[in-house]
Length: 578
Image (cartoon, rainbow, N blue to C red; front, side, top):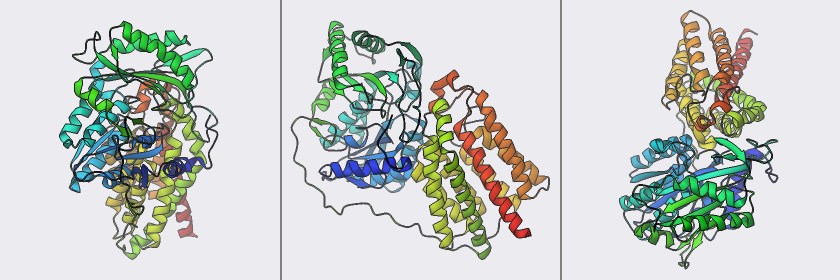
């Protein structure tokens, strides 16, 4: 288990601070992650990578000469927010455009794509390459659905080397795409990992058994088997990856980079024993082994497990793989002297300006702030429960992500209301703060929902029940735009009944408190009923039958939030009648 931490909610931030303090010669802290602390030639491409924390040396450890220009670092096992990615890319780019590259997870796709749009609007040319190397996460006919795991290093390395050579953005993108197409990975685990402060691992493997095809965020494997010997494990990994070769690759005479990756608590000595058999098997198959890597490259906290990646080279990829690199966690070839940037080169945060709302809207803004404070309190009360639920039917980070998001929203809402913002602006600012601090899919969803609420509520008047209902419906539409539908085992399964019942009751003439009470009850019942559903969206999709019997954490947290807001409305109503 993860033993050393202070407040679990602060773990990711404190980790970044310590990482930067230990590596100032190569990296500097910027909003949302790290960027190089050394200069880069003007006009060169900036490779910006990223993902959730908990995978060191991915992602900050791969920032430096010959690799990434910056890394957006999200919360534990949660994607960085769009704001974080945008800030890191803005701090890292130097005139040649930005290549965004990351593992193919729903939250990362949502937030990196939003950042790409923001960067494009700011006049920065952007390309994207998603890493899809994990053969266990989807069949070969659906490569676009595959996760990115230790194959990240292959794509990042060749893209960074190409950028260092001064190639154009399109040229760097092309080699990164080819590297991804020629990379395959497969992993096993002997035990799950535990997040800081958690009493239990995200999943368990029976003694003497091994999970096959698990993910790096605590996602369960696709099957189990007895723990093999080191040589038998090597054969399992190699045989699996040799059954799916990239187009045009014939093993006999092909050059391959094997990467044997430790996931957190398998010792290097054990990895070397396994690797000895891996190299022998590849050589016996006719492959030519080139510059292998053995060690911890993409980890999952304290997970006991390993993955094997095979990166099939051509002449150009071989040259780029061998090119010099100098980052905190990955160094290759002769180091190239780099000029340090001035110590004061940092991205400065700015307070979001507000336009004062009307007197009525400012009064409503105070109510909004109270409701968001109640949301924060209920998430704090249930953070462990949400994490436990998500560990079964997701990846275990939902509670921490919701806590970070609601805490940031609470602080931002109080500040905006104190500065005279109207209700709509308070909601929008709170949504932006939630999205920024929470990251991940839920951060993006709650940010969009609060923005939609604020857009309809506005800053001019005190919203009546019909306006509130219209705002809730707009929020529901914003959430549906992310792609989930009822039955997918997501927050949507509780949101849609809430929206429908609220609308029906208000249309029937109920006051807001009465209508909200009925809608909250419907959301709670619907959230509980998600226990019977198979997951069809997000990381929980690979859990299949294992997730049946446990409700969706997003649906449960939504139901809890509607109940917290209801309590606030009751308090206000009683105060008005008192």
